[in-house]
Length: 463
Image (cartoon, rainbow, N blue to C red; front, top):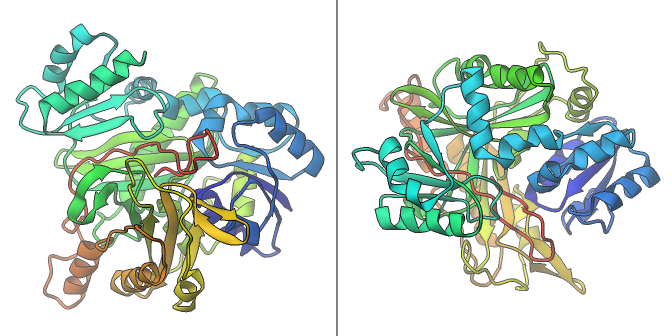
């Protein structure tokens, strides 16, 4: 099988790494790829924003399957263009990707499908702001959640207790010509669940949890994601089936009923609140860095699953197989991230990190001559597995410490609380692993869209 991957970030590197382990191994191509991807696939100098060039490349290569990684080309219609040219594409049409491209439209779909989510108000004028905030946060005793309605290149979401900051963000979005979605704050831990769909049927992957804040203990500004882990030993029994029943299948069915079949990955960003399961948001593609840990645990072949979805031939009773090991990833970010980042710094130590037993995913890297350098905000993702979360996180952190990148930073608490609680439970001294008792995050920290590489204008590598 010949497969072409569109994208240049950590998500695409993780997908390609997993595809490379299929038997037989597919012939892999990437556009444009990155230095890490180039070790697994033939890279082609085609931007993710150049839809004409993508079609031309596909016509030249004649792949059996095209997988589109980032959301920007999906929203722009890359899947439509490639399908019209006769190719099997894993990735939703522009109409279906609007589920991520417009938060207010996603709310409309959820309401029609009966999907549980937060209360929200869409605001298009400054005069509506105060009344809108009062509707979703009448007591003003929890954080304000203010979102730009569309893709916003890393500046779309603010979750803050500061009323003035909430107003300022909304005003900035409105001044730029956009609309704003004001949402009820959701308490409880977050879960990410990827659901593969062929437009009718749905197959879930394993759940994961990511960490949005830049600093340990969920301090600092929101980012595209600083780490993730899977499985979730604290998750309630039957969580995946509950998400399928109440969220994924109703959403896919509602879109199909509107003549908008969703083919690809429906990323369900969820909160397990005191009032039950709620959807924070939908994305129309694999998320980063959750993809790194979810696909690391997948032992079923990936290529046949994606091809079956692209062809509308997915069997809903598909039973995927998973490693019993835990997987943890720690993101290494450039100096300044998530604000103004410094790029062009040499990177060293990847071989040393991998000699420890980790593998290193490239997200924002480039080459200056023969020197590997930083080329974006989130630069690398160090992935490790172990017999439990404690072992996996210790190895991932050791790998991150082995890498040299001046001014870089990473979190040291990825999966720490879940690992400690799982360990205590196994010793009979902890709260157990039944109801949600051991989350690592307990506030809504929305997924943000962020640019990872400064050489591209597309939005890349977000969680």
